[in-house]
Amino acid sequence: MNVASPTGKVFLIGAGPGDPGLLTLRAVECLQQADFVLHDYLSSPRTLSHTRAGAEILCVNQLPGEHPTRWPAIHQKIIDEARKGKTVVHLKGGDPLIFGRGGEEAEALREAGIPYEIVPGVSAALAAGAYAEIPLTHRGHASAIAFVTGHEHPGKATSRLDWDALASFPGTLAMYMGVGRLGNIARELVARGKPAETPAALVHQASTGDQRTVVGTLATIEDLVRHAGLTSPSLMLVGPVVGLKPEVSWFETRPLLGVRVLITRPHPQAETFARKLELLGAVAEILPVLEIRPPSNWAPVDSAIETLRADGYDWLIWTSANGVDAFFRRLSGLGQDLRVLGRVKLAVIGSATARALDAYHLTPDLVPGDDMRSESLAEMLTQQTRGQRILLAQASQGRELLRERLSAQATVNAVAVYEQVEAVDTSHPIFDRLRRGEINFVTLTSPNIAKVFLNACDQTTMNRLRKGTTQIVANSERLRVQLAAAGYVTLGSENPTEEGLIDVMLRQPRT
Image (cartoon, rainbow, N blue to C red; front, side):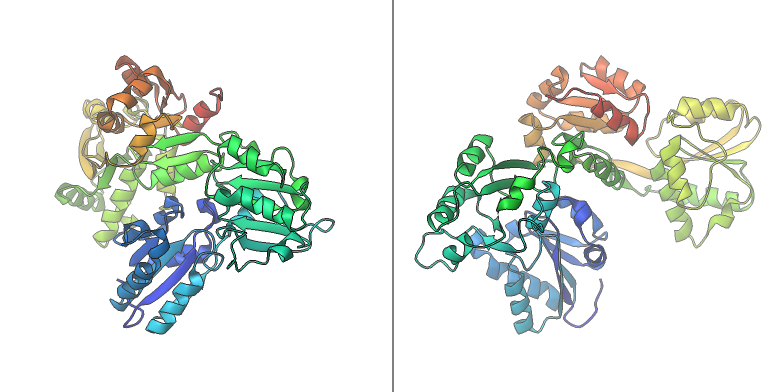
């Protein structure tokens, strides 16, 4: 636990509009040291990947009360956790001080004597303007911008908004939280003197793969949005700058825009893969079905490390990036370092495992290019390891092929440096989206992952996977053949990497 003071400290952090890449570096620093994280339901779940292991995470929806009356419970929870000496983060969508009630929270913390820091975030209006390519200010069209809440009813007697001033405002209006009152807002602005032909746009889910933009005028925007079926979270932009939007923005040209991809790999590989997909416009959903854990018994690994120290092996082989990381974590835990490796030669399967080794400033002596098959590595090693001693660091459930083939001509010690444990949560909302057919692709990257995932699916989802209305993408021909034999329509990648999986998805026709 990070105890900076007897009462801890609170960070009120803006999580940005949805794209996890827009989280600030300061926000990441705070999340990495937090003991307790309270997050709003609109903040991207992917931002939580920056939290440290062991941190407690809670969504505001889990606190007592409904949305309008939950704020006292939020304030009290933050204060209670800080008084336990914890470093507390409240992760809020957008920016904390732009319609995020950050001011009220800061006031409550001051009154309670709790130290705090406010970390700004990218607000929805800034993201909507940038990602829809609508310049919020422009030398020839708008020299000012007004951030306005649309949550009030514009015609009510006690409204705090000056609608006459907004109608005559010589710039851009950014209306937050107003999609449910869009027609009333547009009519009120026109009634107060703003021309009905004033350009207006609604940007839905700005900065994410779900982004959709509807452009019209104050006279037409309500019908256009209704026909498009757009709901919250959305932001309305009003003013001449809306007319400068190109037909398709830079973001809207991304090749996988709106494509929903389910990633079933364990963390952290799922996070890196998700980011690659997001940068192509996809909506990446993460559901790790296996969890990587230390082996139940470290004794065989520790004994092998001692043998390494005594130059007892000629080759050290890893079959996955997880194995590389697990091995070196154990090495460090024993108080050892890279000198243990001595003159041993290193071999890995595939470029991803080679990159994992590079993180430890090591270059493999043998790697079969982008071919991640045990067969390829076994064939290459057979030519070089006759009569030699080999240490094979792998998963407890790893394939036996490599060990069996090499044992015919060399002395092989296979040790489990990690275990893969089933961790699928069948109550996860992703299974509802699968049933409804809202997922376009499911990526499966090993027989173990495929088995666990498919066993967790209900009959409706299984039927979709068998018909190919939801498409499986496998990262090897061997896995594709196995799944096809079991009755599943499966797309296979000749390149067994993340880039290979992405290439398969890019080549599929869009409907």
